[in-house]
Length: 369
Image (cartoon, rainbow, N blue to C red):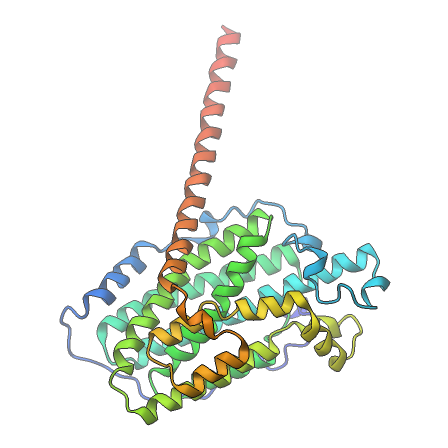
């Protein structure tokens, strides 16, 4: 079945064309480069994996409870609309929410793939080009995995959210070579990592937990790459140039905080847009979710040197200023460790199964003798 046939809403123009700006930069310096970036490049090569074999696609998924989402986590809970829903309706609502979330993950990963390819093209240093090439492959794998999950396990997709689309467009249209780093590696990837982590840590469903855990292991490297490259570059910029980038961050953060709420899902359940936005605004769960979305972005923005007064005031207004003191290194280390632990558990389970099969075969042979 074509993807277009699975969309809950019309995805409109396809392909979506974003005019390319900026220069493709070649370098004739083939020296060793920066040790930190080359070490990250080596790690990117060593950590490549195949989504067809590392993930257990035989695991069953109930599309009407794909993530084990509790009732309290759905924005309609506690409203007059909730009481009108049958159990079947609630299952359909869970399906649409899971579809909307993973569809935005899918579209974001395609955007990340294109931005990583743009970085290969535009960044002036060869060590950064090398690493971005490995990230382009990572993002392609992530898009493949999320697409397969939506097609085979949910059977429903949502178009890219208008505001995510706007942020992607702004990131790709900017001719400055560092903007794909800032828009994608810091803002969109940071937002996605926080959303991935919330679902990974709360779902009781093994397949989405596997997918998110392994994707986050890759994303930990991507954020580290953005931090390294931008921290070095932003030390060289003037105050005016730094303010321009802080304005971009402020606008992007407000856009993500105010708009990424799944209002489209509620509209598909017959709720007018204005009321759907109000319901999403008043949801206690979504308020917490929106704050936690910035747990990866704020410390990264501070780390790369964008921490002017206006940006600090904006984060205080959003109620996330204190996140600037969080340890991003600790969060990223945990992401990698969780994936390694999941691998170890799966390998141990497979080994136990093989041992049991051998023992059964030996017992069967002994009885025949």
